Amino acid sequence: MRQKLREAKLDSINGPADIAKLPFTYKKDILECFPFGALAVPLTKVARIHTSSGSTNKPITTFYTKRDLLVWSELMARGLAGIGAKRGDVFQNTTSQGLFTGGLGLISGAERLGLVVIPLGSANPEKQLETMRDFGVSVFHTIPSFGLRMAEVLESKGKEMRAALKIRLALCGAEPWTKEMRRKIEDTLEIDAFNNYGFAEAGGPGIGVECVFKNGLHIWEDHFIMEVVDPKTGEQLEPEEEGELVITPLDREAMPILRYRTGDITRIIDGKCECGRTHRMIDWMRGRIDDMIKVRGIGLYPSNIEKIIASHAESNGQFQIILSGIDDMLVKLEVNNATWNDSIAVANLKSALAQEIKRQTLLRTDIEVVASGNLPRSDGKAKRIIDLRRMS
Image (cartoon, rainbow, N blue to C red; front, side, top):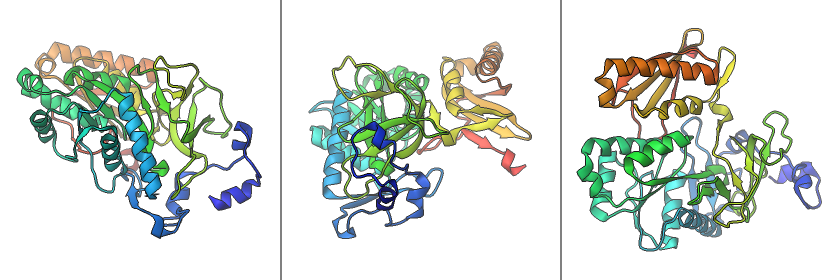
């Protein structure tokens, strides 16, 4: 970062115009200085090291001083309070509590807010639900695709199991998802689910979160400068214009970064939230730049397909996009048992999905409907695209 500041040749920063003169930081910049090149303090002042999940590349390493950890816990406590959690709630974390940057940050935030914490961490959906039942869990954190798996398992166990649960709130993040997937999770688990945003390079989750009104994600602007820029030119965009989110942490000690290009596509929402918070909001992420795939010259985000599939009650939300040959596209999705046992319903669903995908993406695709449980599951981030074209 010191080198980037020298190159900018700015004596002071007095507003958005000056911020725009600062250089961007990219993921490759962080990866190139692995393991300790991004440190801005001596290693003796580092209290903890975490990494990203590393689901697509080598994991990003992130560092924290004691003060960084204190700020992180405050931001996570804010987020949990923002969704309606309160002292006396029992909180369960369903994600990894090791090097992965999410788990321990959420736990420290929950403790700071005064919640009763069950640090279960990674476990299968059956174990998660049993623990929630046994200890009266009311709030939990999950990766969205794992929340969908929990919903599947709970649905298979019947109404008696749901009646024994006290869960009412879920904080979800760490992978792209859609409002349609949220509705699937909420309707089956009978809870309110909220979107949480963050990334390892800026310290992990806790950069922004929805409040109870779900008007957008509040970015904590007393700790982060946010911009939305044109992904191609890097020029700052106005509120309501869609582009790439850029984040600058204001007070990180161990690993400060300048104008980090997140790769997430969103817009700044112009207007105030009913909750009264003055921190501005961003919209639900439309996708990630590096998630976009080209099919027959057309850019496609997996979220485009997810929205269409999850909007149909017959599906359970599980799907995969399989690309092969010369841009042949197959969408495989699971349906509930009632639909699977009705050949006419299956045929109607296949026809409807093919037409909707063609209308919304301009792409023709084959549709394959399978019974629940036939697509691969993961306790980590869901793999939605199987691209066999590279192997042809």
